[in-house]
Image 1 (cartoon, rainbow, N blue to C red):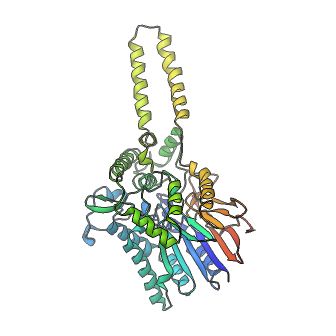
Image 2 (cartoon, rainbow, N blue to C red):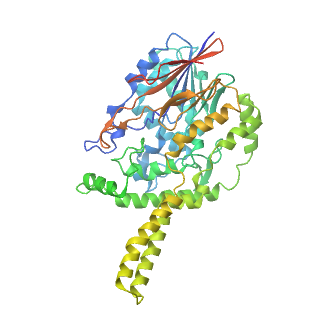
Length: 467
């Protein structure tokens, strides 16, 4: 009997906003994915299928809707009114309910999918939906789907929806992990227990990438947080400000400054509070190994491949927020003033700052460049290769990068990147959004062979590959 898997990732569902001036266009109802996702699921109605959501299905980081204080029992702080609620359990639960209602047609499809007894859904948690670590959010999603089933009067099998905090694995067949743990901008120090205590509340210790989305990009709404097109040079940033902000009521500069300070402050807080390993964490690793039917030794080998969060590298952390450049600029300005006060020829006073200082900056940038947010795209196939040497699997699948790739790691294992469904900027402009490619991976395991298809609801990315 064959086993079918359908894998999608990086849907980035959030609250709906339709702003006439294009603000936060990536949240527009124009980019709903319901019809295309229904068309995809309809192809698997008659065959028992395991649908695997490989992380970042719901994007809690960009949900900026705020309740009325009188309607909730938790306190809403002033900063949350502008940038969204903190990742505590009760606030994350409120955010989840916003998305469930705004995106109800999508979740109706999932409820319908689970009306067939032999269908299953596995939700592998990513970095943007790490709030599903809280069990109450898992229960809420299941209950929401169950209520839809009751409304439509069809069967529903809640036991067929499960959550994976780390990876999904079936020996000899498939290994699925979101991939953010290999990226030090988005990794969590303790993947099975990503919790700190802040203001007497349990809170998800978010990665730098998550914090940047929450405190920076949510207040810079003409950028698309689901792509890397917001990484610009100084001139391009100025042009962006001139075009979108200079003659509008929306702000950019102060939002960027205060947002950056907030991100940096949270990173310092997390660094202090994550020094100690959570209590009983080793026991959680052992329990997880038993659940996966994998030896603890293999689990630890995979964990050793994960990158420490950037908060453990002070220099890189300061560099990301240009603190090192500000320090160097201060030194160079001081040097220029000192030269002006020294009794030397004028041409030396002019030529040294104009020639040596820019060269010094250039050399410094070259020497300290290190990793960027793009590095993970190149490195992640190497991590997949190492995992294939630890466990027995025909296919290894990652998401996170929003790229689509499919190629062999060896004569026994295929590597796939599962792409994205989030809207992207058009290639000919960085200002107009269009639908994402809405990628999927279909796998059929039959007679000890894997038939793999990497496709798109817009176009075919690859043909079929026999392994």
